[in-house]
Length: 387
Image 1: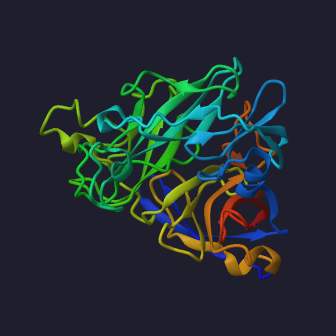
Image 2 (image 1 turned 180 degrees about the vertical axis):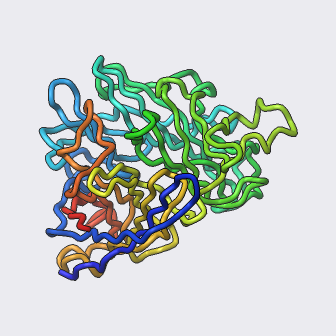
Image 3 (image 1 turned 90 degrees about the vertical axis):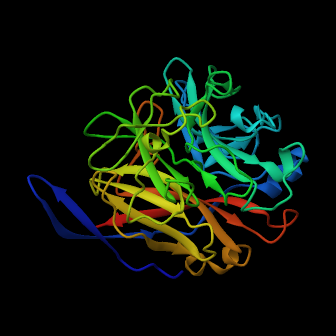
């Protein structure tokens, strides 16, 4: 197996003035990928073409059962004794609403990033695509990247994730939106593809990252970070608005906002990060840094990584895991790699996985050649960080 090269990261130390020092580390695979679950498995077991179409998300309930969220707009829950040993249920526990009204933010819905509480409540971010060429009536006459926008909403379960509903009736479950209404001539834009939640070890806030794919009005493309202390309230999140505004940018529905206030709802995207899906976001106790893992949509080669001390200053993203790093028996069934996220089974906090230690598993999804042969598959590769 080909081993990847050392990744150099720049750590910014912020005190009375801004200084910097070089901090180098390596993130290397220490074993071969193991298969966790694939679309062909679901096809044989359940007779449906159920695919891994978000990054792997996991939490543990109070009985010690590990739950995994990974799927498509019809979500089938998975449970098991560990993150590596999961059994998928054939009955959907969440179905996309498919509302044709873009102002309701409940069209094509992907259940995504969860956080579990001890009382059985689980909240989850929802990636919502308004795919107007398929859902609008009459249908939008163009193809992607036109006729497409995306938002993030909130879902809730009260039985540890076996059943789900909107956290509030749409459109009041909205978490993140750009301050512009749907426009069929606007290239793909909006806040979507959320990372998992991570709790800051210094300020107690929960954070997540989210992607806007193309410039829309005043909003630049790129990755935006937001924070909240109240995960149950979809309106509590505040995005970063630059050094002057700080973490005070509110997200609002463009269909109910006061006209002319768009500038009040613009996030400052991370300057060193590409406009790539922020699939995984964790705090590394070994590096004392945030680690983000990204899938760059137009890149068919591999996966990217960057680090930050504060979720504001990020290192230049490096490609750290790619097809040529895979064993031949795996690589021959992989046309591209997507949805990378680190999960450390030894770093669980209250049932949630927001931190990693020196060792972690990189969960990622392979795109195959045919849904009836190799299809999409979720893999886990052991990694070790070293300084």
